[in-house]
Length: 336
Ligand SMILES: O=C(O)CCC(=O)C(=O)O
Ligand SMILES: [Fe+2]
Image (tube, rainbow, N blue to C red; front, side, top):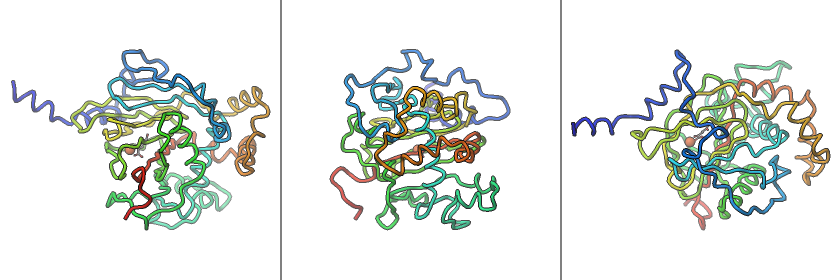
């Protein structure tokens, strides 16, 4: 009896759950998948900060008023926080477009670099005026700032490029809002998933600073996200992530095992024309508020359906996740 209990606790419960949701044979039931908007209070606690100061940068970066945000903590996983889509419709388009058109440009690193060294992957996908779907589907990740080294798992000063200013600012707003005012966005992995993609169980422990939270922004199609514990014997919780949702892995949850066993077709499309129209009818001046010429013109361009068409076609069968980390300790300036 004693032996049995031990055996059971050593079982890889994470893998069992992963396989269940990944399975294509029988469509997995979503009964045990936590859906934030439908969730009961035994499973989640509303931990939205009581008093919130607006951030002047939020609107320009495609975020709704901070006063509208709602933060939830999963009771089983202290430190695992969720913010249900705080992005505007234009904001959704802005980040989808950044992840496709700009972030995969050199000097950023891409999974396809070993096979082909492209200066500008997105541009290359449309080189002949037609869309090269095969090339589009090849991109699985791009790294920004300190480049994650998938073999050594070590960040170095030699393997680093400029961290995108807008993504740093977005992370900064979120960090300030959550009370992590010393947070610095120094590395990011942008993950690109197609309908049959998965991400297997792992922990993110390469960063020197493991006290700083990890911010994860998702756009496009939905996903089942699994989060377990410090080892794989802990049965993971399954959570549905939709476009615009932010997951924060902090405190005890920062080093927990997690995975994406399944991409699911989205049931809501907060980037579509209808949402854009609704938004601009509510606030017609929105698009002209930006201080930055670049952002302003991009926001305007995103309203132009011809410009948006290519991104729209990509995102209708894909999910994009921007995973932002601080690498260095609070008072550390570089890796020696
Ligand atoms: O796609 C996700 O939601 C998670 C990605 C992730 O865990 C990572 O990039 O380390
Ligand atoms: Fe991860």
